[in-house]
Image 1 (tube, rainbow, N blue to C red):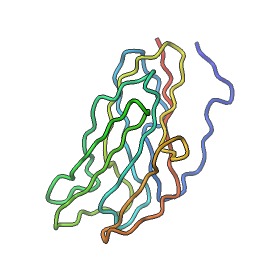
Image 2: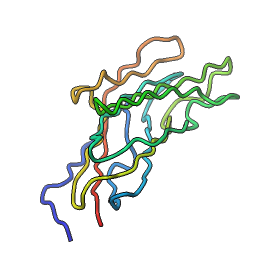
Image 3: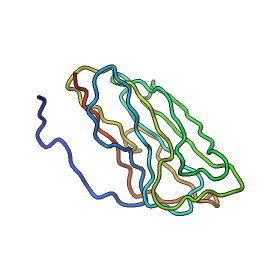
Image 4: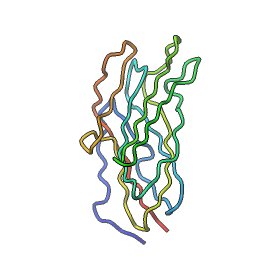
Length: 161
C-alpha cells in the first residue's frame, strides 16, 4: 500500500473551464491510459486550443482522437503538435463546417492517449496551466473572438505495480 497524506485537494471548478478527465488514476508502469480533454460551461464555442504539459521522462504521448463536442454534420478537424523536448502537447480543434455544431454546455473535445514508463509509486502531474511552461489555453467563439477561460484543471496519475 502506498499512502500520501494531504494528497488530493478538490476545489470548485469555475466555468468555463478545461478539465482533464478522469482527474485521478492509478495505472501500472508500462500501461497505456486515456484522458478526455473536456470543456465545462461554455457557450458559442466553435474551436479550441489546448496546451497540455507533461513529464516526458515518465510518460510517452501516443495519439489523440476527436471528441464529439464540436461535431456538426462533419467531424471536427484535429491538429496535434507533440514537442516532448519541452514536455508539451498542443491540440487545436475546429469544426470548420458551415453547420455550426451544438456546442453549449459540457463535452469532450479530444481524447489523449499516453503510455506510462515511470517507476512504481511515482506521482505524475499532467496539467493545462499556462504558468507551467505552456503558451496558454484558448477557446474561440463562433465569431472568432476569445472566450475567457476561468479554470484549467489537470490530472494526477499514480504509477502502481
